[in-house]
Length: 225
Ligand code: SF4
Image (cartoon, rainbow, N blue to C red; front, top):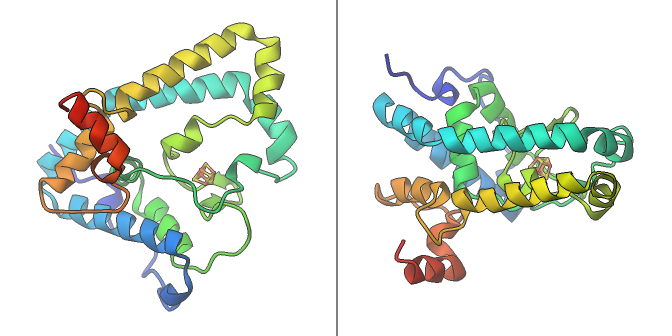
């Protein structure tokens, strides 16, 4: 029997406190608008639509699992030693990481209400410091990290691992090429399709770069996507 996305069940928090919306950053505000829009639309959509969208993510999620497996195998040790243990989290030290609309949709379709509420809570609380607003005590709060984060390796970690494992460098290059099959619209790609699903129903978000970025729009025109 079709079911709603997991993020559409009863919220675990009784309410999201919003007394401080005026003091959140423009980045938080933009992210919050995207997250709440995606939640509202997907939770209000027929369950068959949610199931269809979820089914369309299968290959991408398989790709993400393979990326995670690669990172776990080659980078977990070096990243733990140089960053996580010291809580430096250098790769999460930007306060405005780029997220695509597709990143948000993937999470709304796969996260629990509690996980999504936690993201909203972060976005509605004034944020201080240089670290990413989504960085919690136990790491990233996203159920499935934004693609930009998942594919980021710092030069220090790359040098440490690829110097020792040259074949891993070639494998990482393959994964980066594969990423484009989902994100680079010189052909029909998931990230564009997920935006189009909403655009065709009249919804807009500033995170819909496939439809808003002049460079990506030109690319789509060139390849008739
Ligand atoms: S979204 Fe998550 S993985 Fe990306 S920078 Fe923020 S805390 Fe780090």
